[in-house]
Length: 310
Image: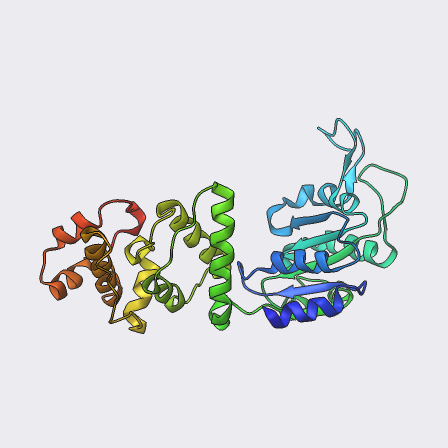
């Protein structure tokens, strides 16, 4: 993300459309907010709108607003997202899902920076910065008639590809620290400690859900192990399974005689679970103990969703 942040620092002050292309959960909205914060419009509003989440019949009103009586149920005048973003940044997420009829109206607005509320007769001016995001490049949509070519070329001011998290593993450690701090502050709890075995498991996972998946896993760890050491078996099965394929679990651990016996035993069991990808049966065989013994030592703080395969 450092490269993208550097590009944003260069272009944020220029009043051009920024287009972000990347898989769901890669952090496109985070980058859009970053572009806003780096721009001269930082004191203005940042207004996001998810184009895939709005019914086609309500899209025009959502974007441009409406006058009282414009349609059934319109009991009073309402501002749209464009009007709410005046002086700031409008972020159009999943722009490729915008209905064709609305694409022409958006293009008209981008050309003239003027619009009318639904049911209105007065043209209003709106000085906004546009940042848009799509899950995929829109060239195929243009060729197949699902996206207007003229709008496509209009939004190609600065186009940035946001790689998936699996292609930028160097971003995982700082993201972990960021999400731990944010979750701890949000829930007003002490952050957990993340030993090497847990970090190895987090680094081994391919994160198909990208940064959003990582954020959710870290938040779960914070809630389960506030102020304590997180453990491999606290992680979801999909994350633990990554250790099976990578074989990156640590083969040595450090114990201290200052630690209580239960803590040392738990650390030893956790390390062997990491070595066995979270599989309790194989861990028990390696340690020469029963699965029930492992369950007894690791029973506290275990989430039902984090149960291991056996």
